[in-house]
Structure formats: C-alpha cells, structure tokens
Length: 205
Image (cartoon, helix red, strand yellow):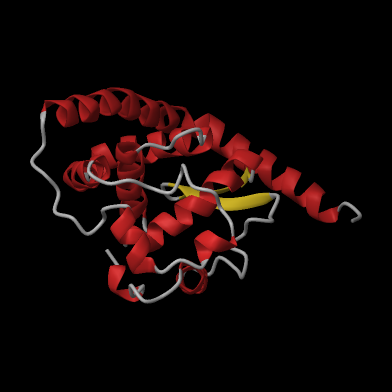
C-alpha cells in the first residue's frame, strides 16, 4: 500500500490531484473522456466511459487515496475486494467491475484479496456519500477515521467467511468466462472500441 504518500493533513482534493499526477490520469482523472484505456491482463483496450462508470470512479479514485491500495493489477484486485466487502450501494458499475477483479485476484493473490475483503467488512466507504466540493475539502485523516480505516481488522466470523465464499463462487467463474472467451471477444471488442473512439474523436465538435 502507498498510504504514506497521502498524509492525513491533506485534503481529499489535494491528495486526489497527486494521485492523478502519479498515475498519469490527466488533470481531471479522465472523467470527461468518452472512452478510457484499460488493460484486461496484458491486453489493452478502450471501453466506453459510461455514466455509471463515471459516477462510481470518482469515489473509487478517492478510495485508492484513502486505503493506500495501488493501481497495479494486484492493487486493483485488493481494492475490488475491499469495495465488495464494504459494499457499493447503488453503484452497479462498481459492483460489476469489482466482481471481475475480485475473481482475478482469487486466482492470483487470494490472501491479499481476503485481507482486503475482511478490511472492507470492518470499514465503510464513500459510495453512499454525496460527491461535491464539501467532500473534496475534507481532510484525509478525518475521512479515514469516519470510515474506520485505521482500526485493526477483527477476527473473521462465520458471516465473513460465508460472504467471501459466496463472492468467490460468483467472481471466479465470471472472470474465467471473460478469459476463456477472450481469444474471440477481446480482439473484436478492442478493434470495435478503437474504431468507435476514433469516430468520436474525428467527429466535428
């Protein structure tokens, strides 16, 4: 985790600006883009930056800042586990995207995903908050305290184990389905999305 980069004294806005710069996301994090570049394993492709994704990713980026999970493949699997553990409220795009990386993490780094999921079960997140200037003006330390991110993770109970098993039973097959279909679907989707993005960029404003 990279929590030390974002000191408790920083505002969420300032910490997010540093996060954007460190990850080369642009000054607005790419929120205004019609298409965004993502990688499915080693395969880069462009996906539609839908309204639901834009709504969720604003909080998702703040969660990276608050939790310290990196934007590497492993880090995305971890934060996917943490967000599923803490719940994504009515952000359906977040549920869907997190399910995929959770399944991937269960195959590549299951202990890390388990720890992140358990941490999520004992903490809260921002998905039920209002995204506005007042939220971005808040101090990192205050928000971490509100979300119980500094507290020691409790011993796992039956409910935690059952929830983790249920998500695993759904997430792993979901991810494997994506991988098994990738020789056909990923190249087609990659070509289609690149062409669609090019048409969008070439169209008169």
